[in-house]
Length: 497
Image 1 (cartoon, rainbow, N blue to C red):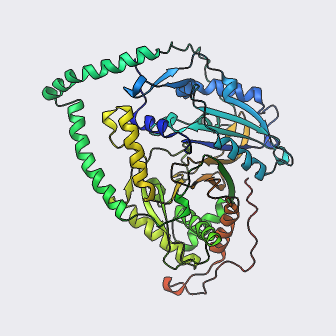
Image 2: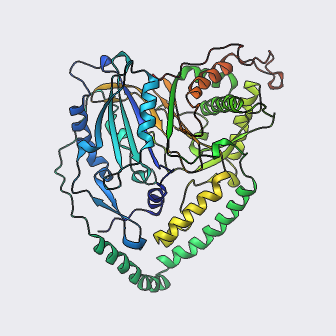
Image 3: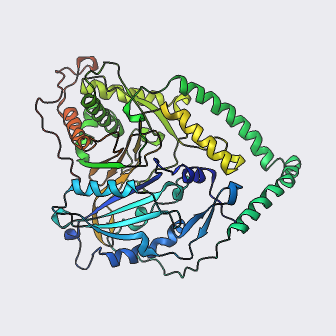
């Protein structure tokens, strides 16, 4: 049976070119010293664990096979030369093995493209962190995850149980992949079969004809939404002037109880505080690159609609990639200098725009997916991305559920950060996870556009501090004085867990 990439998967596959890398990943920080005796994660045990879990993520043993002349979308085919030791690798940080060295290692790994002749993923066991810690870094091409139904490899090796779970051993025998000639003939056969499908559609009301009518309706709505969003483009910003594949990464962890206390104090949602903190970060960064900041200045962000849940789910224990979900575009009022007013504005704008059809977006999508001819779909996808270059400044990934404690081979995970995808025409991407008793922020940037990215980790702690110490303005009926950031307050150290 032919297993073609979906239109969305094919789009991500073809968008991965020079200057654009459509891969993402996760950083899992481990503390072997806190593990029970006998529990360890060394290279051999990690390879064995991943090999045992590959049955849950079958695409991780498949590669992408393109069709000659782009007659059809590429195929998923088994890799007959699959070598797990090529994908699972070992690395060590230079001493002292601090978080800055780890962030630099992640940046270098995420800057390199994946090998298209093999399954599109890598994993690194990183040793030599301070305090005897180690880390696992995963790197996965976005096309492997589909619409979110396929899990990322980190999500299947990090378990809720402290006791390692061993799946039944399964003998995997790769199917022989079709050759280039067979793939081309199969694509032509599908084209020839179209007239018969169209006749069937006339009598049964199903098939490509119905799809085409549906496509026409969606295209009309697409054009309307496109025109509306283009007329209301994002502010001009260096955040939209990126074009290199060189990356920088930084991360920081803050106590969950601190964020929760701010949410209770201001009577807003947990995610409102997270978005308010990010707004404070963007305000500080903007002040670092320009002399003046007008009162009404904003940064436009796109984030998942699920992030507007009024209360974080305390018991949810799902994955952490959060890809393929409906998104909406909102504004971050970085021109407001009063922290609590800024937070209330952030919450109000997000509530309003999350209910507005004009602010909804399905994210990156092929412009005409049902037609399926790759050269045309490839071109229209690039045109679509160029049109929406100015629709927003920065993508933000906020998890909509709390992730409880995880273990890898019985070793506790003390930090869980995601590495977001950095799309074309974007200089910065932000991801936030609520893990155990912490909130984990990750920042990925174009190195040539945001060389000062490491400072953003400190901006997070400063933004948290100003919300924790700021008073309520009288307009909210609470009394008290408005307190801004403490003069001379030290920046955070930018360290993770």
